[in-house]
Structures are given as C-alpha cells and as structure tokens.
Length: 186
Image (cartoon, rainbow, N blue to C red; front, side):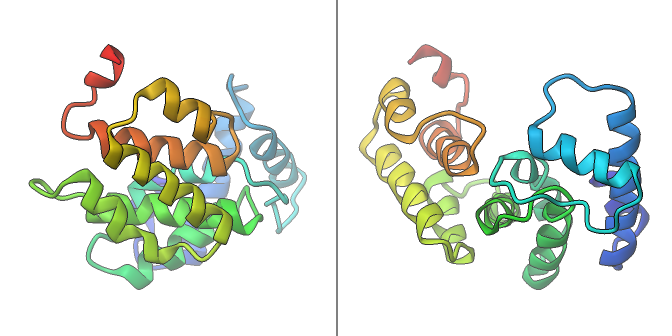
C-alpha cells in the first residue's frame, strides 16, 4: 500500500492498479498466514478479473489501512476515497471497508500528546455500520473502565473477523497506547 501510494499519491485508480500488481507479486511468493478473502482475491487478480474483491468481512483490509491514514492525515476526503478503494481490492463487505476506513482515521488522528482514548473516540464518526459502531463503543468502554486483556478478549473476541479484530485492537490501543508493553504484563 505504501509503495502504491508513493508511486501515485493523487490518483486512486493508478494507486489501486499498482497495489493489485504488488499484491499479486506478494501472493506468488507463497506467503504464510494469508486470509481466505485475500487468497481468493489474489487468484481473481491472477486470472485477470477486474473486480478482485470478495464478499468478506475479514480483517485484511483493516490491517493495511494505517498507512493510508498517515499518507492523507490532512485530507479526510482523500483518506476515505483511498481507504475504501484499497479495501475493496480484497474485501467487499461494508463492515470490512468501514473497519479499514476507521483504522485509517485513527492513524491520521494519532498525534503526539493526544490520548489514545480521545483518538479512537474522535475517529468513530467515520463508522456507519451499527454492528461495527457497537463493537467499537464496547471496546472503548472496556478501555475506559480499565478492563484486563483477558476479559476484553473474551467479550470482544479475537478472530480474523473485522468486528472482532478492530475493536480488540482499539481496546489495546486505547488502554495501553502510551505504553504498549504493559499489555504483556496483564
């Protein structure tokens, strides 16, 4: 994503095209730990399909979205356009697209001296999905209450589903953002 953005920072179509080509190259090197949706999308790219994304709410798009937020920290509209377009290369489910959009928003708002809890709360308006919004608010509430990691993992879940992954990551960031190694002591 970073290489595609650097090559074509002002053109979403060219950025997506470059990312698709890079994703295919990565796939052909037989990566381990690839998600099912990304695997299917890479096969679709390999056979030349223009629409490569699949109906999945996995976390792959969200995992690569932070760099978009950093690249477009001063341009909310571009952040949304690029985040959504790059997410749809692999994931078409609206929850996956919004999860990526939210991660990009958090990355854009993450400034030194700003509390992680304030950052994730300020990013919430980009989320339209009631399911994702509810899960994120639950994560924020758990962080605000100082809940332990085990309890948060039990309540938020920790699968590869975007409704689990992004809220659990939000909990960890909001609760331990200033000192992430404290997470390991819990």
